[in-house]
Amino acid sequence: MHKTPFFPQKALLVISGLFAAVVLLEAFLRLGGLVFSSIQERRNLQSLRHKGAYRIMCLGESTTAGQYPSFLEEALNQRNIGVQFSVIDKGLGGAKTPVILAHLESNLDTYKPDMVIAMMGMNDQRIIYYKDVPSAHTRLFQRLRSWRFLSILYSRVSARMRASAKPASQKEGFSENEEKLKKAIELNPKNARAYVELGRFYRAQGKPAQAEGAFKKALELAPRDDDTYLQLGWSCREQGKPSEAESSFKKAIEVNPQSDNAYVELGRVYRNQGEPSRVEDSFKKAIELNPKNERAYVELGRFYRAQGKPTQAEAAFKKVLELDPQDGLAYVELAWSYQTQGKPSEAEACLKKAIELNPKNDHIYGVLAVLYEEMGKPSLAKVYAAKAVRLRVEQLNPITVQSYRTLKDILDRKGIRLVCMQYPMRSPEPLKNIFESCAGGIIFIDNEQVFRDAVKKDGYSAYFRDAFAGDFGHCTPKGNKLLAANIANAILKEAFHK
Image: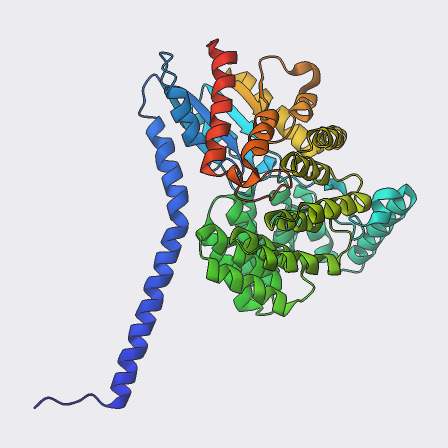
């Protein structure tokens, strides 16, 4: 006789089924996070099978990874000049130029390219020397040298006083010098903070793999430090390991459920994985935990704009400006939200206010130039574009400069042709100034006018799917095709005389 299961048995079956479903969903989502990088690498490895092909390796950040390289290979081979081209995509989303260079030698050994295209530098920190000065982004700091001096002096003295108050066994652990940090670890192998600072040091040097090892060792010694899990997550992301980054950010939340920054980072992971509901939930949770987290509002606003919700985006960016009326980025994002809603006058007023508050911010001038192009005011567009170029030349980041020069030195020693490419909408003059008298053999690609003309004709959204850099963003397929065609024209003309 068939017996009906008791209630506890039924409940157990339901719970088991739900658990299995969650496990399967989690496995599916993690697999999805690996799809992009595996596809990218599979395409790269296919290039090795093309015997006799002319190999071009593309370096850059998220504007390169999975973007224009495949279109470039197609554009070059369609010309039928008697040469087969293989294009290798070594873009790494979120990477700074030292990180890109850290992978260079191994990539050159693996793919043996004949030419390297570099479009990089957007992720390098603008005020590299003032990153530990709390007032570095204020109006007083930017405009008054006396205030700048006092701020830096106070920051340095405070840091020394804090260091002197620590036990002797820990002092070396907070040094920025690698040898001192290693010596501190040698003297006290259980000094978790020394491993953390060593990891930070390696990240700053563009060595995320070494940083990852240091952070993991720190967590073995101090497994309840949520900030170290954040650092570990960033190191994994810099190496193109999204699943490991996600796990680290989740662990940070497990250790400290009040970590608003961990929720912001988790939201960024979900955005890259294409999970909009989880993106929104993560950013909102960060705001719930810390209503003054400006970055969470910025990320939420960008998410809303990408989802075609400009009014919600507008509200998020306005909240940022309530928290920090000097935030140039928030003004830029708010201006794009106005423009998306068909409010060019509000966008213009917003950007002019931003320039009044941030007269040295090249991004804002560039955005205003693009806005004037869309408004049919080319003369004003040229004026503000020229101002943006002048500021970019004056404010070249020393880290970016050194990275480009190091790249050229390495490629010159190996006999590999360098192509320096400027981002869409921007003048190549700052790039040319990096090399000054040693620019021989470099092909410079100008993507400014071709994109300005295209935007003027078809509108910004036809060529860019966001505006993360102010006057440009990640390209749409149409934008990547335009970029690839312009690169192909320059390479065939300069390197092959076609």
